[in-house]
Each structure stands twice: as C-alpha cells, then as structure tokens.
Image (cartoon, rainbow, N blue to C red; front, side, top):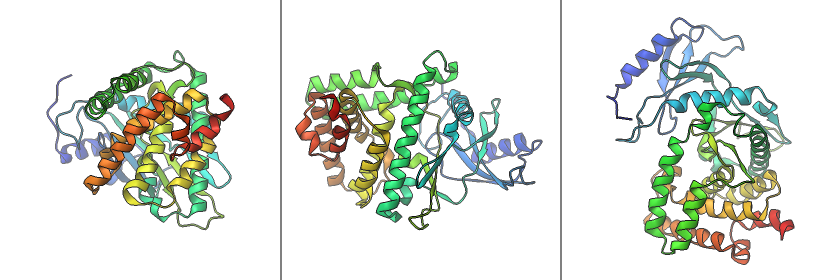
Length: 362
C-alpha cells in the first residue's frame, strides 16, 4: 500500500461536518481531542439532542496515515474492524457490567460511515484516561478498578474464545497490520538489547505464534490510556465508572497480550511517575482475572517484558535516561526468567502474584 497525500486538518473537519450534516448527528462544531496515534478524534456538539438526551458525540476518523507518526502507512480496515467488534460486544452482557465498586462498559457506536471511515460514538463525558487519573486514586479505588477490569477482561476473553476463529467477521480476523508493525519493531529491539539467542528466538515465537489454550479475539491495546474513568474523586463507597475504548487494534491472537499490556502500563506508571497505587491495582487486576495455567503465567511474564520495549508509547516523554535504562534491564530479566521458567526469581518480583494464581498446576 502506497502512502497517500495527506489532508489538512481543515479538510478533514469539513469532510466530517458535511458527512454528518444530513443525519441526526449534525454538529454545530467539532473540536480535536486526544485520541491515540493513528486516528483523528473529535468531540462534536450536536444541533439537536439525541434520543438518549446526549448533546455531544465522539467522532473517530481514519486515514491511511497517522496524524502523529510520519512516514507510515496503515490500512483503514482498522476502522471497520473496530466498528464490527464494538457492535458485537454491544449485543452481549459485556457491554455494561457492574461489579462491587466498579462499573465497566464499552461505549456505543451510533453510526459508521464506511465510505469515509468515520464513526460516531457515545461520549463518555467528564472522563480522563486511567493513566491520567492514577495519581489521584485512593488505595481502595485502585483495588476496585483493578478487580473490576480483571473480571471484565476474563469474561471478554472467555466469550471471545467461544466465538472461535470461524465465528468472527473476516474484517476482524484480517485486522493484524498494526500488531504486525509492532512485532517487527519489538523483534528488532529485542535482538539489539538481548544477548541470548535462545531468549530472542523464544520471544519471536511467542510474538508470532499462537498458543492453544488462550487464543481468541484480543483488544490489542488494553492499557491504561485506553480505559476512561469518570467520577474518580467520589467517596470510596461509590461505584467508579470505567469505559474500554479504542478497539482498532483488535485481532485474533494470544489473549495473554491484553493481560500483559495492562500490567506493563500500570507498572510503568509506578516506575516512571512513582504512582503509589500501582502495585495494589495490579494485584487486584490479576486476582480479578482469575486462575492461570503455568504456561499462561510464564507467558505473561515474557509478554510484560516485551511490552517494556514500547515504553515511549506508554509515557509522556519526560523520563530520565537512568529510568529508561533500568526499565530495559528489568525487561531483559523478565524475558530471560520467563523463558527459563524461573519460579523463585519471578515469585520475588512485582509479578509474584501471577504465580500464586498458577500454583495449582505445579
């Protein structure tokens, strides 16, 4: 696929406003908001309130290039895949689940315009990304969030495995381009940083292969930046509202990647920003996800180390050279110890709680 001529922001905004002008989602104005690296994301104020009373919507628009990363080409199949995935989830009980002190949901897609790769979605108002809210959470809230997200992800993975490969729309099965790009970068970094050919080969096999026991649809980028949180300043006794967003990397693969992605993103908040509640949230998340097999536990250790090589994606760019060096050293240890299945070392690391859930298999 060749790189296309890029449009100006004004061109894209004009196109969106024109597309929506003859629909119930016609907007008086739209404003660009933060929305990842590969899409143009806006909040639009509708001319007339929607049937559910909403006065604003989120608009996601995709092009075959990134607004943030130069010189990459990425297929707009991701837009259709995200729409298809969310629509399927919205038809299940996973769309909105209330746990003891956390409510987890997937926002609705109101309408998809495939001819221009534009989605109109529910606005999860007055929210922040979990990454931005972490430092403001109490220990109790962090535990509730971790537990709820772990339980929801386990339920999603169980449902996805039940669909099998043949039960998925073709567009989701074929939506691997973004993950493949990530794999190529990570493999290059691991080869550069890791002296052990055995470990490098093991990581390549884990990244490129499929295990039998935990294969199904994955979110693909299940991290603290793609989880929105409302009312995080409420009292500990009140439920916290969470939303899982940005499904454009969804694909058929190893579900341990979602678990490791969340673990890595929360741990890096502790490592780089000294967030106190990170460890409590991780323990609750792993407990909420439930019992793991021995092979799953060690795979998650390796996958977490792999995620650390993408540290610049998870952070704000204000890290010191020493912090980065220390994280990559830890990443190397996780790769080696996970590959060697070194129970004792892992048990005394921040991932020791993974092995507690796998102890029954030993």
